[in-house]
Length: 114
Length: 115
Image (cartoon, rainbow over all chains, first blue to last red; front, side, top):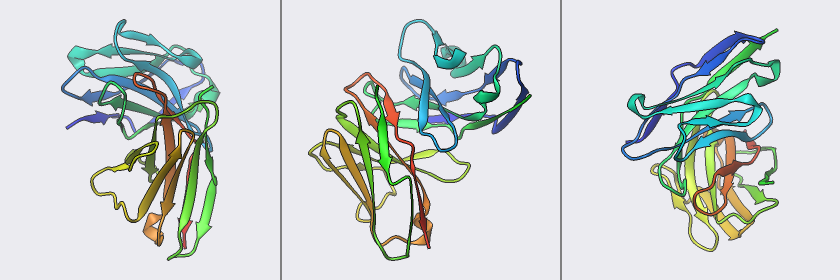
C-alpha cells in the first residue's frame, strides 16, 4: 500500500540556518510528490511538486526538493530559514496521474528561533 | 488564482444535530473536490472524493450516511455531518482540483465542535 513517512515530528532551527525536512514514500509506480505548508488559521499551501523531469524542483518561498528514486525520498530544503517559515509541513504522494488521491505524511512542525 | 474557500470557519453544535459545511472554488471550476479530516497533531485523512453531478466516492471506513456530500456545481461542494456526536469533532478540510495533471488547492478548513 502507498504510504508517506516523515520521520521528524518536530524540528527546531535558528533563523538563518539551513533546513532539511525528510520525506520517504512507498509507491510502486512513478510517484507524484508534493510538499504543502500549513500555517495556523490558513489552508494548506503548495510549496512545490514533482511530476517528472528534473529531479531538483524549485518552489515558492525559497524552498526546493530533490526526488531520489533510489532512496524513495523527496526531502525539502531551504538554505536560510526565516522566522515566518515556522509552520507545519506535509509531504504527500499522488497515487494517480490526475492526483485523485493524495496520501499525506504525518507532518513536521518547524519551530524557528530568532 | 486557485482560491478555495470554506464556510463556516468554525462551528459549535449540539449532539444529534446536523451541520453543513460549504466548499467553494472562487476563481476556477473544479471538476473534482475532496474532503479531508484532520485530528489534532495528525495528518490529513481523505474522507471522500466528489465529482460534479455524480455520487461521491467514500474511503473505506467512512460512513456515507453520516457524512453526506453533494457536489451540485463546478464551484460548490457541501459536506453535511448528520446526527453529529462529540467524536465527530474535528478539523474538516476541502480541496479542489483543476483537470488532470494539476494540483489540489486547499480551503482553510472548518473546525467542528460537537457538544
